[in-house]
Image (cartoon, rainbow, N blue to C red; front, side, top):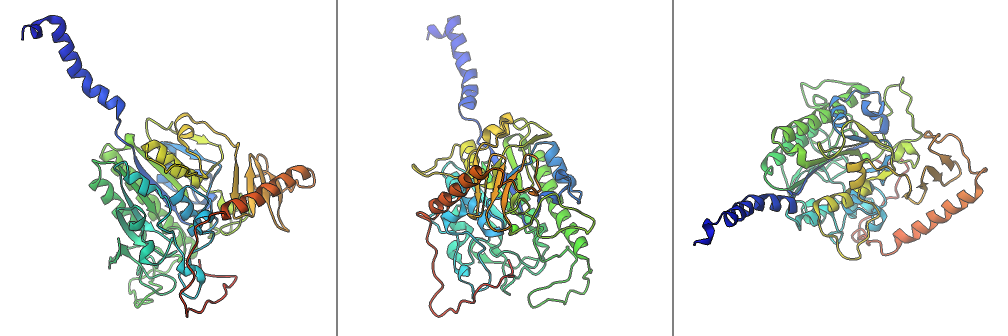
Length: 460
Ligand SMILES: [Ca+2]
C-alpha cells in the first residue's frame, strides 16, 4: 500500500494505464472494410475517367480521391468466367468455368456453377470476423446449391442469371430471377436502383463491424432499359402504361448514370459514417464493352466483349482509400481481376489454406506506395497472353504486339521477333495444361435433357 504513494510507482501506473489502449490499437488496428464494385460490360472507354464518351461524375470523384489503373484486365472476356476468377483469385478454368453459365436449360453449361469446394474470399474473410454481402448479379450457377450464401456471403440480394429485365426481373430464358438469399422475392424497382439501395442499407447496418460488400451491377449489360423503359420480359411485357421509348444510346446513358449515381451515394454513405478512412473501394468492369457507343465515337482499343483483343479485357479500374491511397494518381502497372482476392486476404490478414496458390498477386504495395510493374505473365482463354508490354494473340488474325506504343494492336511484330513468339506460344501451351490439371469437375446435364448445340450468336 505504501509503495503506491511513491512518485515513480505512481508514474508507472498512469503510464501503463494510458499506454495500454495505444498499444492495443497499434497491435490490432480495426480491420478494413471492402467495397468491391463491378460494372457489367462496361468498356475501357465507357467512362470519362478513361477519356470515354460518357460523363460519369461520380466515377470521376472516385478517381480524383484515389488511384486509377490504366492497364487493369478482367480475367475473362464474358461474364461468368471473370466472376469465378474474382471469387477464387485463380484463373476461372481451374474452377471449371471457362465460359458463360447459360440461362437456357437446353445448354450443357446451364447445369454448371461455382462448386462449394472452392476457396472464396467471403468464406476466408468470415474466418477473421467479416460479414459479406453480394448485391446484384451472381451468374455462377442457376441452382440453389450454387447460391452465394453457400460461398460465404451472409447476404445476397439480386439475380443469379446473366441479366434480368431491369424492371420485371425475368431472365432471358423467361424465369423470374430476383432473390433474397435462398428465397425468391417480389421487389418492385429498377434493378440498378435496388442494388444501390441494398448496398447502402448493408453498409449502414454493418458500420460497426468489418464488412465486405460486393456490388455486382447489372449495368450496363443488355437489355437496354432505362428506369422508365417498357417491360420486355415476363407476364407484364409490353404492358407498362407510362413507359418511355428510348434509343439505344439514350438507354445506355441512363443505365450508366443510374450506376454512377449509386456509386456516388455509396461514397457519401461511407463519408457520412466516417468509414472512408478504413474502407477500400475498388471499381472495375467484368469485361470489355458490348455497346459500341455513338457513331461518332472511335474506340481506342481493338475488339470488344468476347474477344481476346484489348477491347475484350482491358477494363476501367479505380481504387479509393483516403489516407492510404494517394489521391488523383494513375498506376500503369499490369493488373488483373484475379489480384483482388489476394489483396483482400493480405489487407484483412485472412487465412489462406496451406498449399493453396493464387494466380493473382496482392496489390497492397501498388495501392499504398504506388508501385507499378508490368513484369508478369497473364493469360486469357488459352488464346492470348501478356508478358510485360508484349501481347501475343493466337490464331490466323493474331500476332505479336508491343502495347507500350501500340495499345490498339495494329502492328504485328511477329515476323521481326520469331523467338519471342515461340517462347510465348510455349508459355501459352504450358498454361493450358496447368489450368486443366486438377480443374474442378462440373456436373453433366441430368439424364433425359436434350442439349442443343450452342449457336454462334447466343444470348449471354
Ligand atoms: Ca459482362
